[in-house]
Image (cartoon, rainbow, N blue to C red; front, side, top):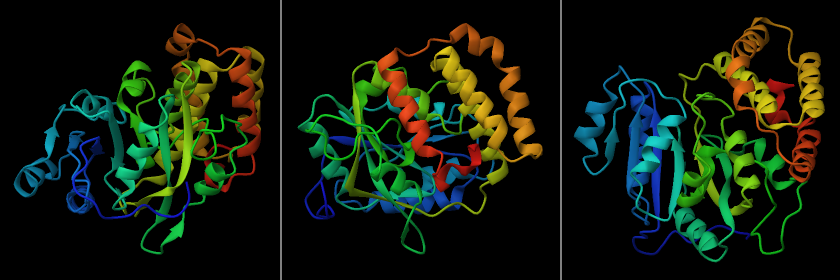
Length: 307
C-alpha cells in the first residue's frame, strides 16, 4: 500500500484505541483531543497507570466518552492488556500519550486486516513532530530482511511498535498480550515472536501514519536500562542456547560501558530464575528469522541503545 489514506468518511466501528499513560496529563489530553477529531470516531480506552498529576480527573471532566481504567498501580505495558479486555471491536490500535493516528489511517488499517485473515498486525509510518520528519526506525521497517507471502500489504516484520500498530484483537488475546515480567521497554518483541510462532504475519504499511511528539518528561536513561534488560530477557526466553549465548556476548561487547548498562545487566541477572522457568526456545525456522533481524539491526541507528 502506498500513498496516504483518505481522511474522509463517516464513523468506522471496526477499531478501538487503547492508550496507556503515567503522569503526562498535558500530553494525554492533547492526544485524546486529536483522537476525538478522527473521522473514524473510534472508541477510546485509557489505562491510567497510577498517575499523581490529576490525569484521571482531567479525563473524566474533558472526555466523558472515554472509558477510563485505573488499576491503582503502574502496570507499564500490561496496562494495554487491561484495555484490550474492554475492546469489543475486531481490531485494536495502540497509542502512547505522546502519539496519535492520522485521520483515515485507522480505516485504512482495518481495510488491510479485513482482507487478510492471517495478518495479525499492521505498523504505520511514524512522523516525528513538530519537525515532521520520519522516525529513524521507519527505515528499519521499510527495509525488513524478512520474506513473507505476496498478499502482505508491505514488508514482513518480525516485531512491531505498539504505539504505531493496529492489531487483530483475537490474535493479541490468543498470544497472551504483553508479558507482565517485561513491564515496559521493547516489550513488543516477545509478543511478536509468539504471534509468529502461532502462524500469524505482521507487516509494515507505508500508507498508514502515526505522529509522535516525544514527551519532555521522558527519562531516556531509564528507558535505555529497561530496553537492554528486556532485550536480554527476550533472548533468554525465546532464542535457542547457542544464539542466546552469542547474542548476550555481543551485547556485552557493544553496549556503552556506563552505569546504565551495568544496571540493565544487573536487573537482567536478577530475573534469571523466573526467565529460566519460563524459557521456551523457538523452532529452527523461526530462529532463522530472528537471526536475520538481529543482523539487520546491527546498523540501525534507531536501536543503538542496545548495541
